[in-house]
Amino acid sequence: MDKIKVGIIGTGNISGIYFQNGRKFDSMEVVACADLDVERAKAKAAEHGIRGCSVEELLADPDVEMIINLTIPLAHGSVNLQALEAGKHVYVEKPFTVTREEGQQVLELARRKRLLVGSAPDTFLGGGIQTSIKLVEDGWIGTPIGATAFMLGGGHESWHPSPEFYYQKGGGPMFDMGPYYLTALVSLLGPIARVTGSTRITFPERTITSQPKYGQKVTVETPTHVAGIMEFEAGPIATILTSFDVKGGTMLPCIELYGSHGTIQVPDPNGFGGTIRVRRSGAGNWSEIPLTHGYAENARGVGAADMARAIQTGRKHRANGDLAFHVLEAMHGFHDAAEQGKHYVMKSTCERPASMPLGLADFTLD
Image (cartoon, rainbow, N blue to C red):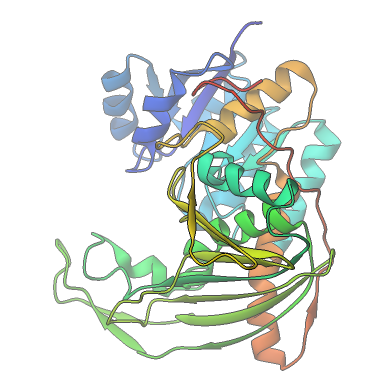
């Protein structure tokens, strides 16, 4: 099969791993890149031996079949829609869009145009989460009962060169890191039926201590401490806590999954590998479980490559738009529940993504 020709829009820091991994898959080939700053796009293109151009030129190129959208989150929705209008399939970095309304527009336009849309995170396709899924499916902990998920830190102003966005509408710890945790939980437990939540802004103003904006003040516009409860369609109940307000660190696990006969400690969903531990009912100690699946290193881009294979073959891709929109709706649901003082009933649903096959070598898909 001929490789799907891909163009990247947005050549910021995250683009490097997509360029690096994009050349390793046999389902796609990155042939061009674009950016609002055309000179930056051309410089990045020269590094990787491809063509650099404007966004308009890239979208008008009939040879480019698929767009990887790596723009800032506030632009995700508009660029997704532009790509679809231009007749391109589109895969976007997380979050899928910032608003539910934009997300619905993207899904509807893709259906009308008979094009595929997909979204990061694709870390759930890595060996850590895929091995955890297999343990659940093989009955290691019995019937899933619930889960906990924790992402706690002190915020981005101490290290990020431009941390302002993380404290504006569409930012915050839930929209920044929630997609990793929620996508992993949906992959493990299936779709969510309803959520509730509580939120707060602990520090109304932040001071940047990183360069080059050292000393600048940031007004916080979005909750920075978000606690949520999820009831899954299949029955399990999970809690999630995301925070930019925890200054002293934590010893909590990233994700624990509880079943009728045991517990799984699931590795960091922001990575592809990691350590998995299981403690079954009656066992005296935790057991470390070797990974059953590949993709244990940084394989960002595997979700896009999997979508490219879906374009070639007609099968469903795993990091798909329905999954990404379901996660987006849940994140908004936590905030809505906190503001309105009541449960938020999910309007969307999705299928659990198909598991990755056993025995796959890295950078292969089927």
